[in-house]
Image (cartoon, rainbow, N blue to C red; front, side, top):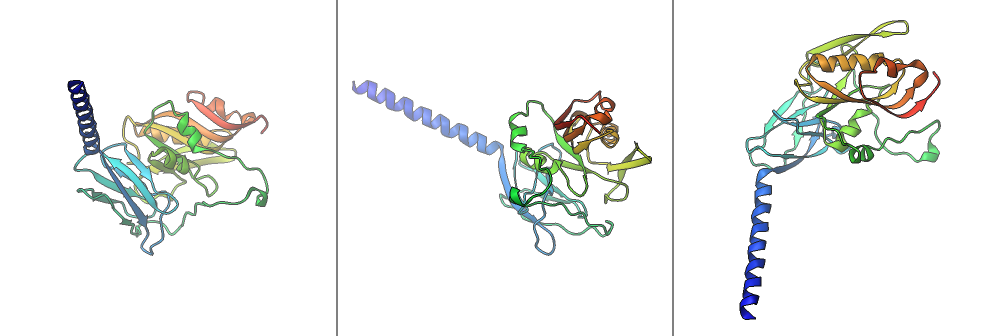
Amino acid sequence: MKNRKESFTSRVGLFLLLVTFCLGTIQAQSSKITGYVKDQSGEPLIGVNVMEKGTTNGTVTDLNGFYSIAVKASNAVLNFSYIGYKNQEIPVAGKKLIDVTMKDDSETLDEVVVVGYGTMRKKDLTGSVVQVRPDKIANENWFDFDVIVGAESRGFIFGMPVAYELHKPFILARKPGKLPRETVSAEYELEYGTGVIEMHKDAIRPGQKVVIIDDLIATGGTVEAIARLVESLGGEVVRICFVMELAGLKGRERLSRYHIESSIIYEGK
């Protein structure tokens, strides 16, 4: 009886030792870095891209400018980028907390992009409200991708909160002259004339899988141009998602070679 008890105790001890070793190995393989990103006046910056240099591992800052990222490489370097501010690269070097102050880019145009965030009671709203739940997208995310690309949509950027929820880098596409660094551009047809959309030339690396998110698909010209930009940089468009689709304008037909998803489909124009 005594021998059985000692044998059981030895097995339990060996098991606990093995678990401790495994946990230690896992912890050694990745390191969690957190911090806050602010501007020079001390205000938090929302939606700053935080990337582990040389990888597709990234996240964006939340409403308080806070970020959290797990890096694997012992010599990892974090890259912080945001429209209108100079990029910063900071070696992790064993640090667990890295706070960053972004500096204005003097070459950026004077225009300021304002993105609305916040909360409001539904009874105080007028008009229609569509709820897009990034957590639902995360739970149904059976396909693999690396980055999210989105256009500015009437002052709002719909893709950014999805990128934040899924811990993916976000890339912005804008009209000419709005982005601070070297860009590539694509032209698309409008009802009266043509339009141009631009993206940073170094935004996407060859082979990256891309999801494009926009608020509305009408004729599909803008998003088709964005898809062409992604492909010109060597990326692969694996999905295009919209909040609303005006089916009567047949934009889906224009984008027929892509996988399209819409939360709301309105059959008219």
